[in-house]
View 1 (cartoon, protein in one colour):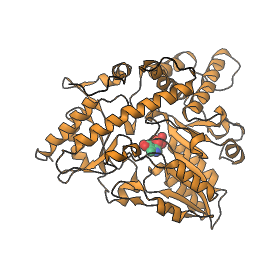
View 2 (tube, rainbow, N blue to C red):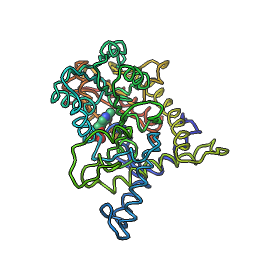
View 3 (spheres, rainbow, N blue to C red):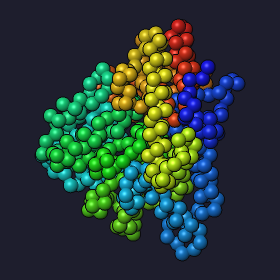
View 4 (cartoon, protein in one colour):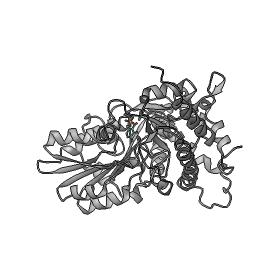
Length: 428
Ligand SMILES: Cc1ncc(COP(=O)(O)O)c(C=O)c1O
């Protein structure tokens, strides 16, 4: 019996992802590796190939292919502005990945700090939203505070945050969702508190981006970064910033490259085919709107409105996936889930689950599952501040993450396999 809600167009969605058709030992593979990088729909693959095939060119030349290329790349700034809920496409910068963009921004922002200033990072963040700021703080002689965790649930201790915030705080760097535990942080509230104290706010939305609608206007943050390869696109990073900040801060850059937006923060020649693919990923997400059963009667057919509707349905569907995880994992002998497990709080998490077992390492468990065509991750997932603070180094956790293309049946299969694993002897 299928438990997949008929309202979510799962078959039409999965049909577009050829990667999901992989078989191993005549059995379908189930991809739970989305937190490390999602699968990609055919329209994104085609847009990358088409860019390279027909419009491959550097920026700004006088001839035909360059004009096509420029219009695709300009369109991508608009697509990503729509994706993060921003008004101004020139406030979108592309780069190699979120880490490189954050290192570049931290180095530039750090030049404005002086001894006596402070910054705040958290124990729940990916290291890409911690170490770039710590390094810039070291260079500037600035104090770094770390927001501690409520370890039971892997949520941020907001009282600790309030205590550490002061009029000396120059920057608060927070994640929208943890790539280790799936916790969704109260970014809007934290941003308001930080702004009241006079600090800038940088948000890492890399893990959140495939799961929920982002609106920089609603969050009120000053900078936000994400990575297209986590939301069904190619390996490209994206940075949004407030225009006045991007214009006033001086990046480390070459002399002939533009001093104006959007080129100012984009060092060197970009991965044009990847940028074309990132825009295609946004268009893919917006295109889910036509598959929704309540699609008729909407007046607003803009891409932003489609993204609003699609993400509200993705969140609804992913809640059912989270519930399937919670009920299936409960029966796995000896398992420890690192994160929110209460059904009442499922709105504070996405379906990304970190777990450990008393009798085998995360790597052993991942290998056991891989042999059965269940693709999960093990290790610290670069969420080192978390694994260190809860004593999970060096092994880290076993991490299974679901996206809107995963099914409840896949989750049941994974939970069944984990149960079987726990009743089998450990093979070293
Ligand atoms: C939450 C989070 N932040 C930042 C990053 C780093 O992103 P990138 O690989 O684009 O540098 C990742 C990558 O896994 C992530 O999950």
